[in-house]
Structure formats: structure tokens, C-alpha cells
Image (cartoon, rainbow, N blue to C red; front, top):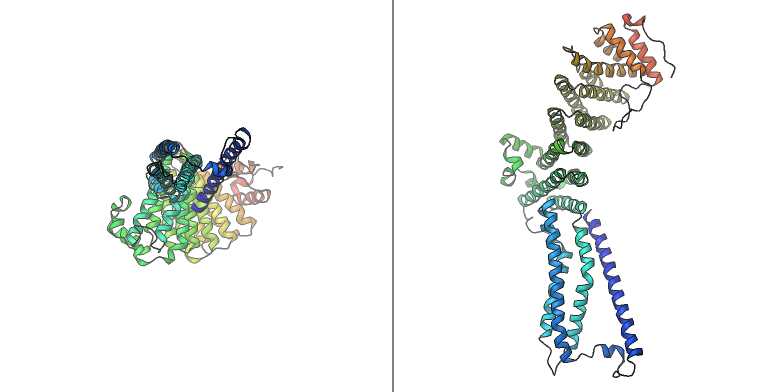
Length: 537
């Protein structure tokens, strides 16, 4: 990733430099040859135009070289001033790591070094000219270096601004952090031991989180999104390299114990991170959690992006068959839900549940024994947070969790997953007897989701499972069941009337499923007489 971000600006800078150099040479050559052959054709000595060009005069050179050294010194001063300002601004706005990266970059060091050498060369050569001796080659080299300094100023500024582009800085930090943490090659200073690499990894993760949080404070969603994505990409790619790391890398030494995110953990918790080989994932997800918390109060839509990135980490762990990391990802998803509910942010809870459900669907698709065991745990978490939302009056969150459980049960049935019946059992435990009118409204959504699932079962000849839902709803008041049925049958549009990520209306059923829904409610004898005729759709 950094190779792409650096090679392109290098190419553009070289092309620009070449264009300026060619244009300057062409312009000077044209004017010089016009002077030589046209305007001053009879007043110059022999030897041709090139010989006349380098036939330096001692007195002239003594005056010119002094001015030349001043010009190069001015160029060096301009370059240092501009670079210092833009680097400081970037470091203040994003992260202090910018300055370190800038002065470690070989291109920057090479250009600044060239300016310094050219300035010294012009200064020294001015002292070598005598009345009886003019060093032609040295003066020519100095003129060429001075010309190069002036020609390279604009392309270099373009390179600097490109180098400090936030997207490239973020990508470079992420790539360098991953490379330094996981590479065994001792190609960089300070990476001789596992503790050194751990320090560099901690610094890189913290810098990415700082960039995201600072961007959120300035309402800069693009940069915050890039920083969150870099954290996600680092953690995802780490899963593919983790198996080749030495045992010392996973030990929790003094370096990690002194880190702010680890220092508050109990000794047992630190030992568990070492045993499970998950300290880096824990640190990275902790940084994402920090971004999530900042987004809740400044830019809630960014919290959804963090939830998406966290889901990607979980899916990467699943692909790598790393149950410990997947379990850790689930814990952070739960933490996001808790934070959203504490903030009473219904929209964020809705979005987190959407990503959480997609992670659960990935577990279902994996079809393994332990993924399904984790899936059942996730279903229990859905039930817990649905009830928690129900208790604090966030009815829509409870309803959303119920419909997500409905979707998981449908998928488990389609895949004939062994955990299906346990998922259905958890789903039927979400609702409980309402105590207030608000709670009753919340549980209506749960009953709708259960009835929707029953229509799926009946459509796919799974009467026994539909019967479980029927028995669970048998104690409901007839009036309530009738209104639930009528509301669901009245939905005719699949698309929701607002812009949402899920796209579809929770209560929408196809005509075939509506027919099965009528059959399901027909089992309640108290409703049979008042069942509405099939709607013409």
C-alpha cells in the first residue's frame, strides 16, 4: 500500500522536474544561439557557441559565484520554511508521527541534502577562483547544481504536499506498523527484540486512533473513516501473518503492562491475553472502541463505520479459524451495543445490530461446530440487549433485535444448521409479559417477528417449528393477535419509505408467505371468524 502511494508522486515529481529542465534548457539554448549567430555574430571569439559559453572570466566569476551561493541559500531557506510549516500543521492536526515519518523518508532527506550540498558547493567554489586560475569543471558543476536546486523546488513542494496527504499518511502508518510488528528482518533501528516490535505496534495503533478521534473532533468524516479502515486492515492482515510469529511476540512483558490500555487490566486478564495470543487484537479493537465512543457524541454515523470495520475483523478471524479473536470481536460488538443503549442512541444501536447479525450469518455459513457454538452465544446476547432496550423504553431496538433473530433462524433453517432449534428457543424467550403500554408496544414487534418466522416455517413444510411459535403465542389476547395479523397483512411494499441500510421493510411478506401467515393465525380459533379476506395485491 505505501509503495503505491509513494511511487506515483515520485513519478509525477520526476516528470515535472524533467519538463522544467527541458523547457529551461530549450529556452536558454534558443536565446543563446540567437545571440551568438544573429545579434552578435561578428563580435565573439572563435571556438563555437558551446566553447564561448564555458569560457569563464575570473573577474566575472568572482562576482557571479558570490551571488550564486546567496541564491541557493535563499532556495534552501524557502524549502526549510515551507516544509517546517506544513509538517508542523499536519503533525498538529493528525499525529506527531507525521514529523518522524517525514524526516525518515529517503526522498525528503535526499532533496534537503542536495540543497545543502549545492549551497556549500557554491560557497566553496567562490573561494577557489583566482585571477590566474578559473576551475572550469568545478564552476560548471556548481552551476548545474544551482540550476537543479531551482528546478526541483516546485516538484519537491508537490511531493511534500502529496506525502502529507492524510489518506497516504494513514495508509503508511498502518502498513509500517504491520510490517515492523510482524517482520523478523532487522532492517530498522529499534526492532531487535519482540519488546521493541511490540512498542512500535502499540505506537502505530495509538496513532491511528488519535487521527480518527482528532478528525471526529473537527467533523472530518473522510479522515476518520480512513483511520478506522487502516486499523481494520491492519488487524485483518495480521491474521494472515500471526501464525509465523515467534512465541516471544505473544508474551505480555513490561512494555505492554505499562501501556495505558493494559495497565488497568487485572493480572489474570493480562495472562489470558498472553495465553490466547490476542493482545494485539485486543489493543486494536480497544482503539476502535475509543473511536466508537468519540463518534457517539460527535458524529454518530461514524459509529456505524466502526461497527462495520469490527465485523470485518471478526470475519477475518473466522477465516483464520481463530476462535479467541472471534470471541474478542463479539465482546466488542456487545460493548458497542451497551454504549449505544446507554446513550439512548436508537439509530446507532440499529446499525450495530445490523453488523452484528451479518457477523452471525458468517458464522452460520461456516457450518463448523465451534462457529455455531459462538453463534448460540451471540443469540443469547441479542436476547439480553433486546430485553435491556425493552426495559429502558427503546422499543425499536427490541423490535430490531427480534427481526434479526428471525433472519438468523430463517438462514439456519435453510442451511439445516444443527444449532437451529437452540436459536429458535432463544428467539422465543425475548418477549415477556408486558407491564406497561410502552412495553406492550415493544413486544408487539417481537410477536410480529415471530409470526413472520412462523410463515417461513409453514412455507417450507416445517409445521413442528411453527407449532412452537404458535404455542408460545397461545396466551396472547385475541384482540392483540388480530391487530398484529392485520398490520402485517396490510404491508404491500418491500422497500421501506426511508433511506436505511437494510433496505427492506421489517414486516413485508411475499404473497405466498402472507397466505401461510393467515393459516398460522387461523389456528387461533378466536380469530378465525374475524380473519380478513385475502387482499388483492
